[in-house]
Length: 343
Image (cartoon, rainbow, N blue to C red; front, side, top):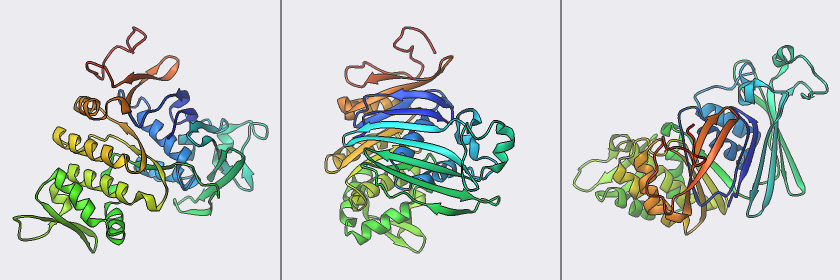
């Protein structure tokens, strides 16, 4: 399990440290305060594809990574200050450094002085991950048309595999996970969990590019899109958890805006199901939410296994304030922070 993370010079986060994570971690706060960036930092720190994961987080924001916007992942666009992540986990510690890449090498403060001129020379990113006594280096080059080439992947596996699910459910790869469920002969188990969401479900299958659901009392198979975003989200998360052990044995799943498309009764079904599955294989979750209903339901279902972190922009930079779900009478998004002052 991930215990903490320190983030430096990443997106809008200049210097942020978050400690004492629980099994389920929930980030709340106003728009653009840095909640999604925290999930992205965890994902890049523990992701499987290292430098390529930097492309994925840009794509998840519906932005194609280009040489002209590559510096946007650096705090205040200052690419001469490397992005750095430090994290402790149950197996040791990880350090990650991200620098821009130019022809032949990377940039450093010693070699260059005029950032505005040098920015035109950037064509990629280089990521260095240190785990205990091993070091892994990966990088990529992006062309003016957005094509990626010269990809080098690292050779040091992460002790925990991070998976990032953005707020755009269409990017989650539902069909991919359902295909694996079928190949791993876990379709019956998936259907059992889907019945907890909708008792009419009797089967699920993939035909060409569509995921189809068999509902009792309905004469034809129904495209999953007609059952709503909440059902698709629930199905994707459960399918992922059922087949995850073919990739790794320890996971953290980062889900942005978890409540999107979910009725409050569906939130309860989702949290109950993932709590049960997380007892069978090592999963840790990181959520962002704007929903008071989600907070209240998670407090009742997850209890002391969860923690809420309020993310706030202050004059001193981004700060987080932890709240234990256990014993809290209620939690509101506009609550005065624990120091006794407002944001």
